[in-house]
Length: 223
Ligand code: C5P
Image (cartoon, rainbow, N blue to C red; front, top):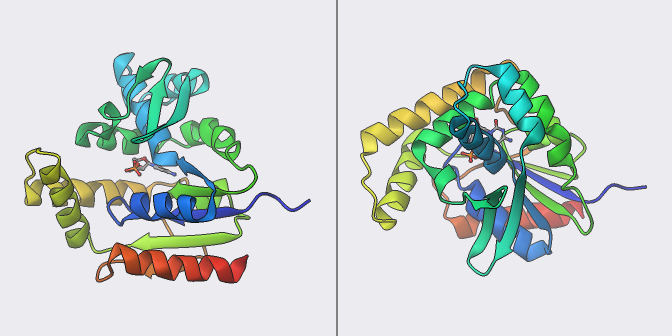
């Protein structure tokens, strides 16, 4: 039997995957998996439990018992850890950096694999991450790798922070983005890289509307 349709969207942080995948899920009536949120919740829970981000064994144990759920509310998808709403708490820069440390451990990634695959259900799934097309859903019917220059990604992040009324130092953001990219691209397991059969989209000089239109056209050609 043909497996449920998956649109895998991978790429570095700040390339616009969040906005693109949200729009695609709505357009095609598919569920949405924000796999980064899973690593972020694990990092957050580990921090609460006083674990070190290099302690792979303890992180695996934490991953195995992680009580994580997504809940759709009027204002978007909320992330719950047990009964605690951690939607905002997991989005801090510090927790993002910890998530990328947690995500570099091979056994942690294995522990979270089936949890992610369970999201593949009819009528279909839009999966947002770093290894959706390469590892988690290697047989996805559509794979897109969305990239953008580090400078453009830092500028977008700076604008997001400012819009949220937070302080945003461009140089600091660029440094953090570059460091996180290095870690994500150079880890031995599931490094951030395009699948061989992925459509490469560079959003450096594209608006979200252009990216969305290009992606939709490509997806329809595969349906
Ligand atoms: O996408 P987001 O910034 O929320 O992801 C946080 C971190 O989680 C990333 O920097 C990356 O290290 C890790 N991640 C991953 N594999 C995924 C999704 C996220 O390693 N599929």
